[in-house]
Length: 149
Image 1 (tube, one colour):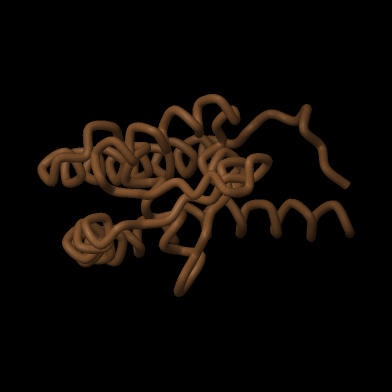
Image 2 (cartoon, one colour):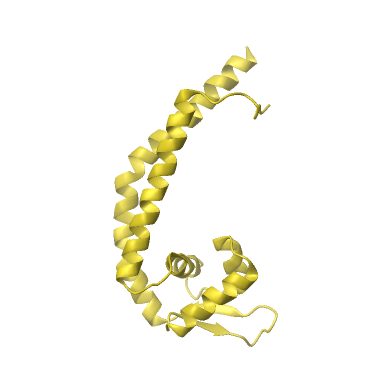
């Protein structure tokens, strides 16, 4: 049973603050790295990665892109249009109801240059992220064990 009204412990506040700090730090790193390669908005890199994450020959619908990036359909369409204008994606509008967004060779090259640095950064911060998550999980498990007794 979840008790959302109970007061958070100091450990939970510390763990949550640390987790949020690490996430902000990674987002700042990611934004700067993408900017260095000419991506003007952090969402551009995230969109390219979401499309690439579909696997070989991935075709991302605009609605799928909106869902993956937590955007409105209009925002996703605007983002895709900016990526197309920059030469990073093509938009196959043959299917009017579900236009597909696909990466260009230029986008593939950008991802090849950005991804190793991102993986390195994630691997460097992984122990701290896992520790913060463990602190939150362990505290919850102790709470559940106490509740069961």
